[in-house]
Length: 425
View 1 (cartoon, one colour):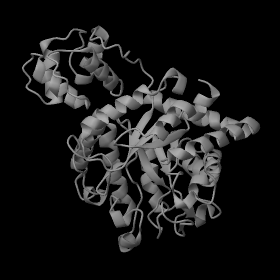
View 2 (tube, helix red, strand yellow):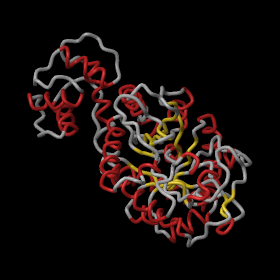
View 3 (cartoon, helix red, strand yellow):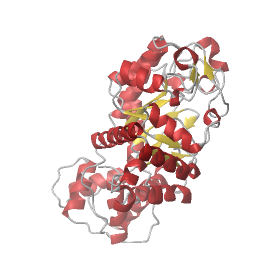
View 4 (cartoon, helix red, strand yellow):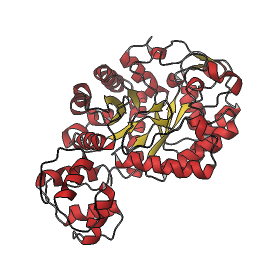
């Protein structure tokens, strides 16, 4: 990887889930950004998301990202915070409702929801919320309690139910994100819309840290930072910019070795006092790894600032190198760096073998009736083991591409299938 490509791995850019924005495409192609978050509240279902994620995957070229695939993420918490909706996505209840379920039921449901995300081509869920909001102040807690994003009102309930959600979705092969460290349960304003939000309660030994400690112990690969100020830990700066919180508390005290991602540093009022470039530099300097900006227009300034600081500051340059290594290591652990299919439109043994692995049938490299029936079941058509026009139409609809009346396999559909399988395996 070139230096520019390595630095690009440190960023996650937003694009509407309804379609790739020009700014996000430029961020990936020109600024080598290696990660994406799908935003909005589309209700068209999973098929167009499959087409979008396959398109995003194709942007991770040798020139753009040294062929390192993008982490494609979204916010699929449930309740009021569920980006992807419609056919193929269950309507999820609020976390507060989930917290009343048995752990067995919650784990099982989370596995289903996680599988739906993975089959849409999403690699990472920016969930669960592990913040604890006291019952007495929940209605006056704008970022979490007001929207019922917490699993419960005590650390023990949040730990138990948050871990169940985490375990269920992890079993569906999703990278998960515990957020918003060290907790937004005691604030009275929202960091997205208000500057100078402060927590006057949380200390390094507060019980509200317990759910995060448990998630770290359970191997959560990503932790998202809060942008509030914690006066009893580091009262001089937001947690997202605080070495005391990121490196001291999260990495050293809790022992977290995974990827630290910021909350949105593009539009959030909590960080508006700093320039876009300074936000990225401060976060990485504090020990963070992945700068999340929903606003793609901030990418040029952010990337330029990180490059400039790394060129003149050896200590910062070492932090950049360590952050890149943590991200690549996490991607490797999630299987993103494995062998990939060429998009050649040929339904040969390699593509069929990949299809069989995805379907969970015996890998033979030959398109046999068992494979066809499994594929027909997966795409929602009659599972008769015979591949014809109805099966082709169902596959094209599943992949989110226009139907063309094909009676059997054609290169256009196979190419799209190959791109989709690259998001799955």
